[in-house]
Amino acid sequence: MRNAETIASLWHSNPRLMRQLFAVYSVVLAIVVNLLFVSSLAAQPSATGVRIGDHAQSTRFVMDLDAHVDFHVFALADPYRIVLDLPELNWKISSATKVAGKGLVKDYRFGMFQPGTSRLVLDLAKPVRVKKSFILKPSGPYGYRLVIDLEATDRSTFMANLGKTSIKPVQYQQPKAVQRKYGRKTIIVDPGHGGVDPGTISARGHQEKAVTLRAGQALKKKLEATGRYNVVLTRDKDFFIPLRERVNISRRNGGDLFISLHADSIKDRRIRGATVYTLSETSSDKEAAALAAKENKADIIAGVDLQGQTNDVTQILIDLSQRETMNYSAEFANMLVPEMAKQVKIRKNPHRFAGFRVLKGPDVPAVLVEMGYLSNRHDTDLLISRKGVDRIAIAITKAVDRYFRDREAQLASP
Ligand SMILES: [Zn+2]
Image 1 (cartoon, rainbow, N blue to C red):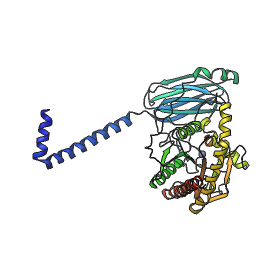
Image 2: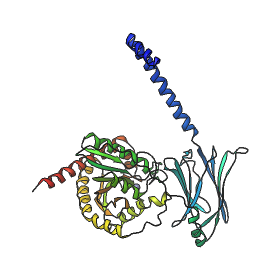
Image 3: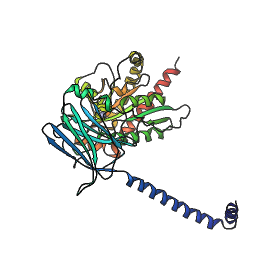
Image 4: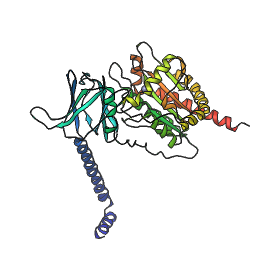
């Protein structure tokens, strides 16, 4: 109380001095907060390297760490995978220093799964048994090492071990609540892939998950600048979200339009340009079907257990109500294609159809935009540039404007 009175009287007697003191105090506070933040980063354990040893019937997978970590191992089938969940790690293994798969480990990938959880997924050449998994303490030139010993086994043994190691389902992070303003439409912008699922990767190492996130953020900005839309990003950081959860985010936020952003790759490196996809039970062509199959694999790539996700009665009802939504989706796609053509190169037959899981929201019109090809040099240059993603954001924003203007006009007409 006395202090407060002293401060109050000082404030009146010498306001300038007090303002200066207050400024100094703010700066000191900012520095302290910053230091705390940096030290919390430093406290995060790092994964610094991976080694794989192959011994005929067994394979040893070793990950170098700079601290002791708790981890959890479990197996997933079809395809055969071993998944390790760890605390959030700082991955100091670049695509340049990453060693190739060997023996029973065909390939592997790692990244953030959920804030707080990092994940390592091993793709297996055949069914395995986890013989041992443990952490070695530092000795000699080595720091902490996480060791997994795998042994070849048969399918029935692998399948019998599935249940024993599975963990409780992860709580997926909710996107930040947007301040919903009355009369505004809600646009769900969905940057494809993320975290442990990098998506497609260019020859120079650019990852689809980073391209889609930057494009999503640019689109959010452009849409919000009109003052006509609430925009929800399904993810605003580099973490993984299952396909079904992306649809749920849209539903929970009352999305009026769902836009999923992706970048493709194809064998023929000369092929470039954007394509807009909408949902359909039958694919418009072989390429569209193959693409949908590839994009639908995201959950498998990230080591998500898809067992129990069967087509039940609700799924049939959802499919029925999708019919009307599909017409609106196609309407939006038809408006988007000419706008895209004004800004970037588009492919022949730029509006195609296929069975993308992420577009299966029952009541929200949805499109999936493949913004270009990371297998093509020119498209990659465009997609990694600020200007490139801005052009795409402009095209989409114009199409969104037109779509809602038309729908309102339809509703207003007698
Ligand atoms: Zn994709």
